[in-house]
Image 1 (cartoon, rainbow, N blue to C red):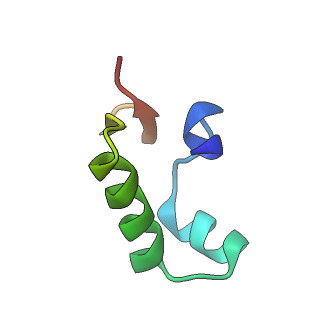
Image 2: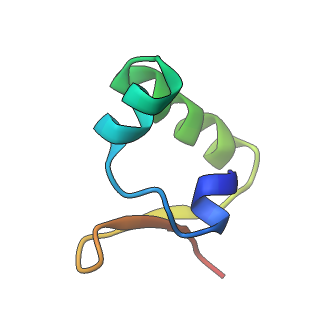
Length: 53
C-alpha cells in the first residue's frame, strides 16, 4: 500500500525482487487490497498503479 500511495509501484518484477517474493504473490497482495475495498488501478500511460479517487 505504501508503494502505491507514494506512486512508486510500477513494475511488479521489481517489487517482487525487492521483497524476495514471486510476481504472483505481488498480484495476490494487490487483489487482497482490492477485496478490502481499495480502488487500485493500473495506468497504461504512466505505467504505474495508483488509488482511484
